[in-house]
Picture 1 (cartoon, rainbow, N blue to C red):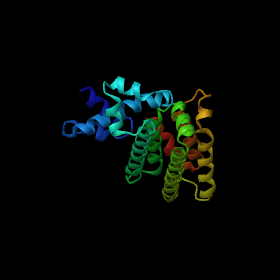
Picture 2 (tube, rainbow, N blue to C red):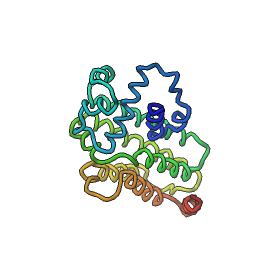
Picture 3 (cartoon, rainbow, N blue to C red):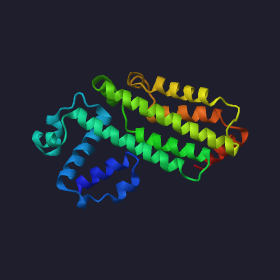
Picture 4 (spheres, rainbow, N blue to C red):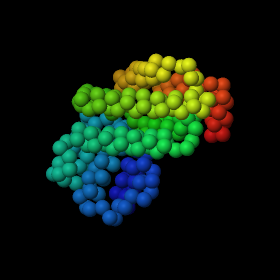
Length: 232
């Protein structure tokens, strides 16, 4: 039961609630269960504490397995981090597309995306990002590229839809807007900066995206935005 809980938790905190509720634990091969158990456990510890100071000995001991079992599935801690982050990014990509493909308005989609991103980053602590940036610089670049690409793509589509709905300003220079949003997030979403601030990663994302989005709305869009948030 604990294994099932940990695996379902792993799916839940990565925004895959449907998978979390119906994940067929009993149908999984034993090796897959063990691998998912390792990933779920590491996810919990790494995101809170980073991974540089956590040893494979600790991980294996906490899970009641040998180091040999750990190395059967992963080449090291960095391999676990890589697979965890690839899964997180895949979940973000899937959830963004689910929201963007819906019939909701641009304002509603923006609100849902902000909530989803805040949920996905709510457990992320600066130490984890610092360790990735220092120990896995090439992979850190991939994470940054992923963030920039997703933000640019989402806001490009939201602006196009919002303009057609009359909720976003048609005279706005879309390219300048997108560059400002990406630059603002790049400037704040740095581990060494977040480590010295009282706000969380999710707070930063929510605030930046909301400020820029509201600034791009027409009067009609602002009314819709205010009504939506009053109803929450």
